[in-house]
Length: 327
Ligand SMILES: NC(=O)c1ccc[n+]([C@@H]2O[C@H](COP(=O)([O-])OP(=O)(O)OC[C@H]3O[C@@H](n4cnc5c(N)ncnc54)[C@H](OP(=O)(O)O)[C@@H]3O)[C@@H](O)[C@H]2O)c1
Image (cartoon, rainbow, N blue to C red; front, side, top):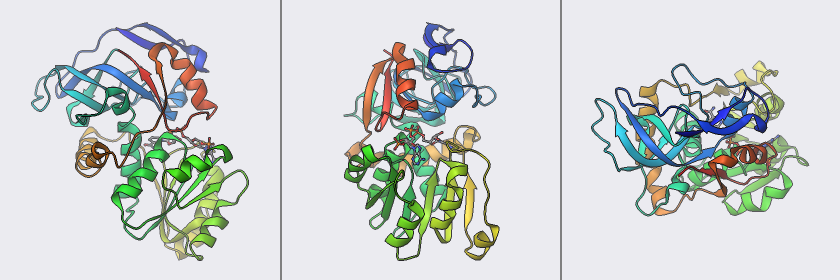
């Protein structure tokens, strides 16, 4: 089968379209004939050699895919060849065929095309898991999201609006993306290059701060995130674009009863991921099917142009998701 292969680790130029062995589904697995996959920031980190796949996962890049069930392994009863599905993958999406655990598949809503579906699993599930299941975001809360033009956070804004009737949403963005982030439903977009987001959050909330912060910047934002966090606030760290090692004021953390939580979706035990996909299917997928949440596709490119897609993501030229068309 055709797949994107890596000639070592490095910049986008290490990626090339080549031939790989078509995988066979094992117990509880489903093989998908991939119509489309999409690019995640983590793929670029893996390509650089800094995010190895978990044990047993495909070495091929790609954390999500949409397509048609091609073959099911022993013990799979819920899915049949021909079903239109989208899936959370531990790897292998940048290929004509990919394996997924049967519990990590979702039916594609009837009216939705497979390219759009390929932009859903990783970012919407990440946003839902970390804001709601881990962060405990609920009605009446204030949330701070960073990088509102990215895949995870365009999804996060939409999910907050769809699932909550009252929620104050503050979002950081670079100047060129502010208007589009505002249009997605943010109450206040903070220009992170020219404003101090901790001060803006405090002013906006009358000093109270944010109940939940979803952060993928890490060390560079740790002190300001803590300053922006409310009493009993939860800071959920899902990425390290600004470094891994920072300093935290434990005194403030203790007195304000704040919680800092690290979270990674890919490496979770498969049973836990099945449970998350099940809750997501019940609570969020209907909003996507109805159009309250609408995956934002910045661009769709053929699989062979995966290197261009990575270069564009690393330059942060995108708004929303970059999709790769596979077949
Ligand atoms: N732990 C997990 O389970 C998990 C799962 C999925 C994703 N993630 C992580 O979540 C992050 C986002 O992933 P993605 O696929 O959505 O990537 P993405 O589409 O590239 O989004 C990243 C966004 O970060 C913004 N950004 C960069 N520097 C910033 C800064 N200093 N302050 C605020 N925003 C900044 C960029 O926007 P501008 O153009 O405005 O700079 C960009 O839109 C990545 O770090 C990824 O590894 C983690």
